[in-house]
Length: 435
Length: 174
Image (tube, rainbow over all chains, first blue to last red; front, side):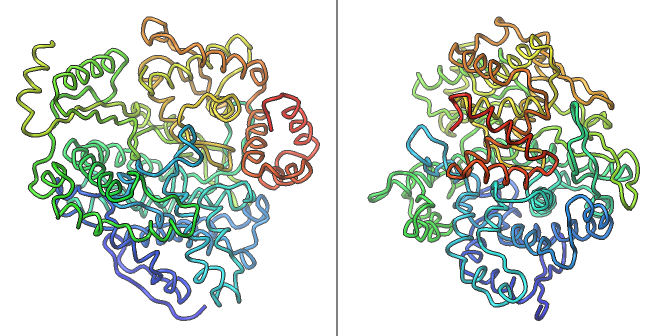
């Protein structure tokens, strides 16, 4: 196992790891995350939010491990019985830790903002790559030396980069056991969300993202999930005693969405970052898109891109009015917005407003909550009906059916129109005339 | 048509069409029908499904169900015994949402011709097989069956084989 090391990060304090994980953390692919900010230019709104994907990734590994250990200790017999889980022989804990640690290594500059500039997979009609595709490729190829070929792995675990990548992507090569554990990294009750809400709230200096993490970890369990007309199987859920902590998690998501992730100032800076990155990628022989993750050569180019590199471009005023907005805090302003959950009539009115502004040569941008990576929904967290026994999991219900508060959450469909600061007056005049 | 309104209309159209099949529709069945509509019938709604213990899933479909419920395009009922039951909502009318593109309606019709009467359990199995076929198209049938069973031990190999051969008999499955 080797020595234990630790790094102290906000929210969790000391995060521990061993020699193998230290070599992974020190790998340039992982170190790059120090130069990718978690929330791009949100510091223009909340000056403290300059934190990086690096500390978030350590936080996700820490929470995922706590969740894993609680479930394993509490439900060992059920796991043995239903998933053929063998605590001694299994490498599931290690797989969960590595997937949690590495889940974000494929992020583009400015995190999710840059994701819109990823190329199509197979021609213009096909789906676009997402950061998980980059993550999977980087884990399998560029990190092979510290995963597949690492002596600690060879001696004790025999995991491959492909195992970790398949786990992150949800590939069909997984078995029922790995699919079950995958929920801790990518699911309704995942460590990713649990970490970023607390971390983003901490760095923004807001309390909206706070919820009772310790209670969630204390009450996490396995439940039976009965849906529709058949008992579906084993799921990760929360004991009834943790129901309010789970409500807190969902409400934290809602408040953080409203106060941070979809705040009009943050959205304005996301748009400036997106446009600046596009101009950066267009410069020289570029095509305005990020390099494709499928080839070694273009992954090498991709790894050279980070916030610092693009910031250099912005600092040299090469991103036109977007450099100006970022360097002088002259961001676009929101001139009109719909209600939080717009209906078809409001959406039609929004489109009309946008058209009118564009036809009057106003550089208007439409921002749609529906296109956000951070979203609000009721979530499908399962709450146990009663305590599971040693050998049988409890039946469960969805949180939204036992919580009136969660039941009222309606999703998010708000639309904003942003315009450059020196066009605000004109834009307001045009909108007023149209009423 | 706005992309979210289109997706809400698709969900409500599926709920409406399912009602005529006299088979109940819950969240699992709706998720799997949307998956098959997108991945097999080319009804591109922009969802990104991947595999969970409960089969192909995208939490954005759940968010869209919440939205469709909020604007009364869907009615979602829950009963502890039978689970979810989803039916079209009172505001799902051509006046309120405009008409769904004809092409979308045709794809939903074709989906129902082949999959409309399967229950949630049957749809989950078929959606998982389709996921495996798309993820590993070069597998032979016996290996596809093994892989599905490894993912979903609750289905026996005879049931998987029967579902696979049923899927292959429709010309749309590779």
